[in-house]
Amino acid sequence: MVAECKVIDLPRINDPRGNLTFVQGEHIPFEIKRVYYLYDVPGGATRAGHGHKKLQQLMIAMSGSFDVTLDNGKGERQKIHLNRSYNGLYIPSMMWRDLDNFSSGAVCLVLASEVYEESDYFRHYEDFAAAAKEA
Image (cartoon, rainbow, N blue to C red; front, side, top):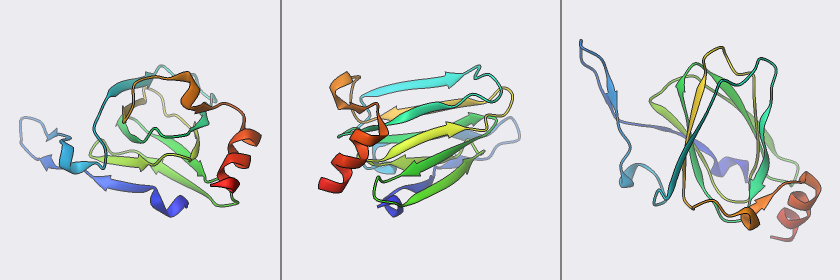
């Protein structure tokens, strides 16, 4: 269900010299095995457009903002706007995601539960939806 996706408030340490946010194991429901980030996304571009069989993610707008549209392949969709570096969007496995509406200078940080493995990806929505309906 799309309801399994949730925005997680990460710890914030406010300081006049600059704030600090951190992520530790107890903050997210998976062990981090990969970290990557998206940046310099051209205006009007869409990223992601895929789903994962087993990989889970925490997506953070480190700078700027963007929208994440989540789809469970069973007719449920939800759009979430990320624009705070102390919020992370938890995305479980078997969830299609599209990213768009990137602000100028936006940086999307992704913490992932698995190393890159092409066989874990659904690259075509029709294949994802068929698998989601069987699950």
